[in-house]
Image 1 (cartoon, rainbow, N blue to C red):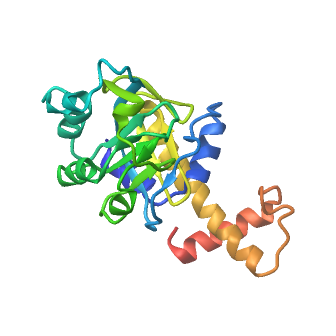
Image 2 (image 1 turned 45 degrees about the horizontal axis):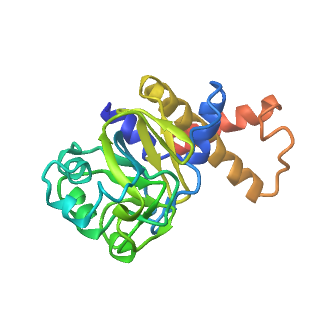
Amino acid sequence: MNPETKRKLMGVSVATLCSALFKRGLRNQTIQDVRPLRPRGKNMVGPAFTLRYMPAREDRNPMSIFRDPRHPQRVAIETCPEGHVLVMDSRKDPRAASAGDILITRLMQRGGAGVVTDGGFRDAMNIAALDMPSYHNRPSSPTNLTLHEAIDINVPIGCGDVAVFPGDVVVGDDDSVIIIPADIADEIADEAVEMTAYEDFVIERVREGQSIIGLYPATDEKNLELFAEWRNANGR
């Protein structure tokens, strides 16, 4: 992705990106019931590389299936491009794990920018300690084979009720994860940076005791003049 767009998205919140996308009519871009394994104080940003699970069937998913080097879960870990975020459609079902700490450690070592599942992780405490952003529904110890079969790599998926296409831009903060369509990522990043600057100005004014009326949103022209002065003084 555009390195400048990535830099901008590293400094804005998912909440602000929600507002920027809503202005364009995109209402359902935040992945539901997914949260970071631990707060990191910095964003996860990267293009989406996807893995889709389907309901498991006993005759297709014995433990021996992991010996197959073509197994989609293993192949996804070994082919996710550097700088990408692995996004997994686990059917919004955390009762069986999407992956464990060995696979996610391998993803990190290969340069993955992060991992997201609407299911769960086993060995979640170990994944949380890794130096790579990870998001899931909740910890889950059973292997994915008990409920989920990895079936497709880098295809359109649904993750937490959000459509995710390969190459969409994934942004995660300490609250949640949002999906930005790739073709508007540059302009969304620009708008979010502008929105963030104004919101930082507003926070300062509110902490000083100012009313939000006329300030948020900026319906009083005087506040826009003060904002321009604030930006100049703060290099924003």
